[in-house]
Length: 419
Image 1 (cartoon, helix red, strand yellow):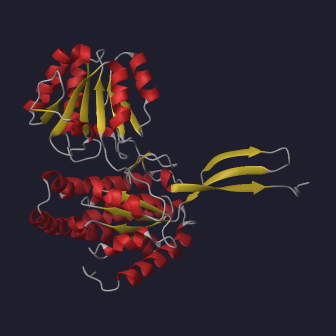
Image 2 (cartoon, one colour):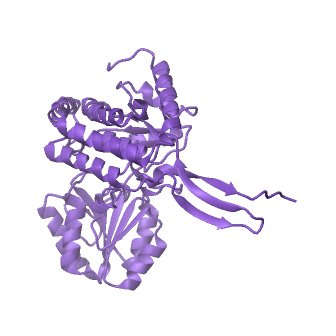
């Protein structure tokens, strides 16, 4: 593969044609063949882990030269443990029930017709992502499991890592006798390839962007095909006066500090007014002791004073906004105004508070007494995720293999005619 390619439109047309052709075989591929391809890819990836790590080191050098933030460098970095996690995800997805062909509903009509709604592949999925090389495996595996062909355009930062992982995916396809065009990786860093994907209505059925606000905003503005995406993860955690103090302190620390660069990291802490000077002050102090820069609202003592801009900021860093609110009603009002509809959490023991929180907030993921770091398809039992969707299309929240299917109606009669 070459980094620079002269005729990007022709190259992308060729890739799109090959992907579209592959869908014909994938739509009817047996569950066993898809499982074999993913298991084979897992084996190949583990066997090639030294090569993958060497490729990743090239990307890490590139990222340092480019001045990537610590959070971005953490997303980019691979080690043997993270490769093992990718292998485990491949095996998990391989072992899941096949989502294609599921009978979603069926019924009989008085006119003699028997109707089934049956899950089918979406077709060709384009995935555009930034620094996380694991997306190459996650997206490729989930799309294949759902019978879709996928065109992967990884970020310039993860160019070498993605190529090494993609090679293992191809080895799995080859071993299972499935078309290699089922999982294609765009072989250039040239951004013109992204433009071609966004307008490839003849070849791509859905675009999934996975990256920062700049990338996702670009895709949402310029795509001519449907998009599954979230723009930001402005994640709120509301701590009610009924919260268990020890539980609340543990959850807040984990939600913010476990990994600050993921979209499920907490970005805004909302504290019931009645506990602001007790549990609220303790949670703020806990965060600062861990090195978190707390942008504190009125009535709280943090690192710096919060401004209006803090309430709508996705930091992806060791920073958090904190604010006192007048109970669950105040928390809900704040979240409705500033949320990006990704993930929100309530820490409370009062069931009425939890019921109000769950009933009146419409983000894709709502949590109770659990760290927002669990906002992840792998943690939801999907094996992995291709992204988090915050729109109102059929795919919402973590997008796994099931969400990468559409459906068709199968209608059976016994000579039925309509009068």
